[in-house]
Image (cartoon, rainbow, N blue to C red; front, side, top):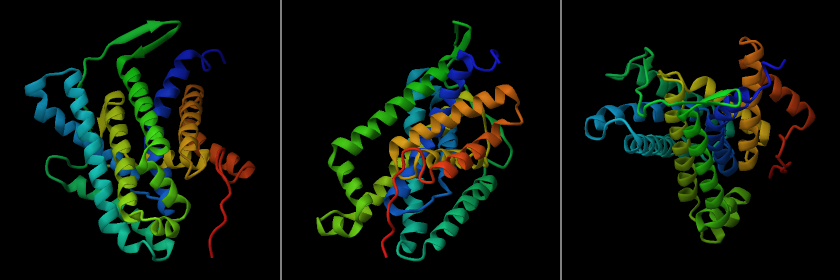
Length: 302
């Protein structure tokens, strides 16, 4: 038992939870604004990883390995994730905005499959996995019975900065106030002069950018990428969002870290249990609290 519940597993769980949190935030923001489960969101994470991969090979000869290249790769990954998310909203979801919800749900699944197969057939990418480049030299720190790399520290710090920035944006800025207003009542927001479609576009862009950042962090930590890499993390991040309370930003963060820690401890006990723990947690929480840990019951408008 002592070998399972130790500081090393806590660090690994927090690192995994940070990646899940960045993806889960996109799910929960989009659902909170347009009541859409965007199952293509995991593929924005994949695109972020490939964008960072491309940035490395374009700029490596100019910058060399190190912090400037890593920062540039992060910016490129976030821009790619945000751009493809905005484009997906414009082309696939906006025309179905006021159609039956099932249409949007099926479209989201179709968009996800299109992105995966399109990039599998795309020149210079292909369906085969490839190693993610070492953008930063890896350094290992040891102490207190644990081993932690600078990659894990970067994951935790970047996720904390982005989540803090999102919290500030939502709570303290005019864009954040508009997002909260649209989330509560779109019709009333329109009457108050808020451009609802612009807010929805920003929501998709921010969520996609966070997923893109998660793709870079995952590429650094688990240096293997492929066009289908977003399927399982995307599904688990969705579970984390539901676990914390879909549509609730703090809930998505909490659910992601709970899931990351639970999966890490389960893997330490038995590697075959890790993937299943996410679904087990989801079932247990929904049986006890159907709205999620921090979710609130909202009456549907007729």
